[in-house]
Image 1 (spheres, rainbow, N blue to C red):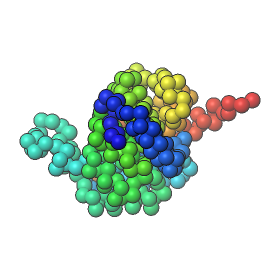
Image 2 (image 1 turned 30 degrees about the vertical axis):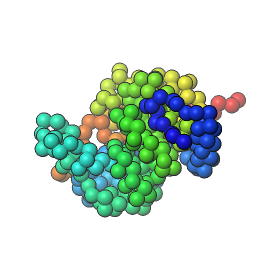
Image 3 (image 1 turned 90 degrees about the vertical axis):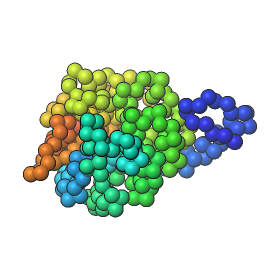
Image 4 (image 1 turned 180 degrees about the horizontal axis):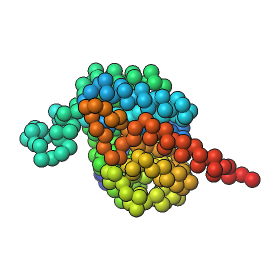
Length: 296
């Protein structure tokens, strides 16, 4: 039997189809469904600045906010294997801004192990975006619970195949993707029995209010009524209007970047401090209360 990736032409025989459908149906039954509703995801990204102590301060601060507000929270890392992710000919390039940032803030697996434990100790769910297949293996090694697929990886079929193999709930970003690409991703993960959610996202950092396109939440819910739909945001951290609208549009889970200002480190314009995260969550909770129930 040959199981082809979503990028290849469907050339199954009838026997192959029956075996494959049976295999993925069985896998879907085995995978425990994850409840995405009301999940708040805080993306650490590179805001740790390659400094474990600074990262732990951020983790503690966000953990305290989740405990105070009573919401379920996840702290998300980003894994990339620098030695293979960045081509050797480009590692010393300073004119491509992402390369020096990735290289200068790289942490070891043991350091991430320490941080993953700090997340668990703070009562949060561990989560990670892998940018290569080797990073999926690190996710398994560290016992990280949820995997995020970045929109830039939407056509990275070897990575997607590896993620689909590991029996973890998955959150998929749709920033910049056509409906055709989103449909393909949905079909890919559904066929493999993966429990997943879709996130509306705009990859502009920070995102102006007139670029948020929050009606896309409604569009995704209409197209995929059986899937959890969320909102991954990069707008001004002081604005609590988008999260209110997103919830009213039907978003079930929410994500934003987080960090801390310190003597040695500044914070970018789309990342939230713990205090701003608290304001963000309180705005959501007020909106949930204001919207009330659907039954009379």
